[in-house]
Image (cartoon, rainbow, N blue to C red):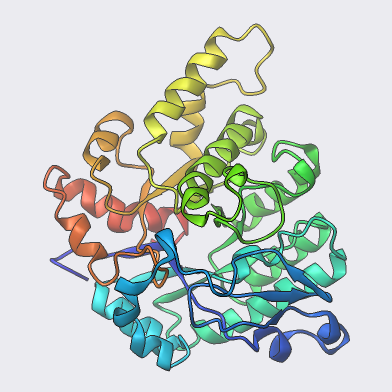
Length: 369
């Protein structure tokens, strides 16, 4: 709690240990499990997956938005502790966070190889989730797991989604907004996943990464320039996913599905909702959704903010019921440990809106009221 506000981080990151899969994956998959072959304690990590390097950050890259010089000193103690659960809780105390929904770092790219043995992918997800469960046991009231699922086989994804709720007590699942095999999110391939998430009552959080994985993404024309890729990838991939999910009819067919668009700022949302509404209204083709896109957004979607200067305008234009808060700890572009202070410094945001963004909306997203 800070300045009288109860605060939940919709998207706080863990930093996985290098031996996670070695320790947690089932023995039959150990020879093919991910191996972190560069230090996970810096801004980048290289991963050997099933005998082949997974495309991602160069282990020596320190430029642009990922130049973590400023934050290095702030997270030095956590790094010394291997970013364990105790250090996560200390970081939350320092920032003023009461609860955090936990997303991966290295794990954001693990599933982003299109041709992967679906059974191996499912085993990788189970191992990560079992590790995260043990991590959260340090203080399960404050540390809330968001699960990895493998969409290489929707049957395995559904099985794992049900397990992480029934057995592990997790509050959601995550996916990259870039779909595998260019298979649109509104494809019927995913319908059984959406139905399962409706049944078990947890959201899916879409979360991109600048150069983590091998699936094509916005900003790819910039090659290895991760600064330019980062600027483009996070918001633009979420914009595409939002069009896909809403205008493609997913939320029409699945009215109880909850969808979060994370680490992408929120300043684009008003423009994007207006463009979708206008395009659907003027379209000569038969729309796949019966309501206006903005109405589906307000009914079933959330978007994360990180103390943007434009937030007061966005609240005025789209309301304050669908915005959640994020610190992006411990990544190089996080404002930790002053992220909450920066949010509180937005003088034009009312205390009522702050309470919704800091807590109420996120509690509703993750069913923690």
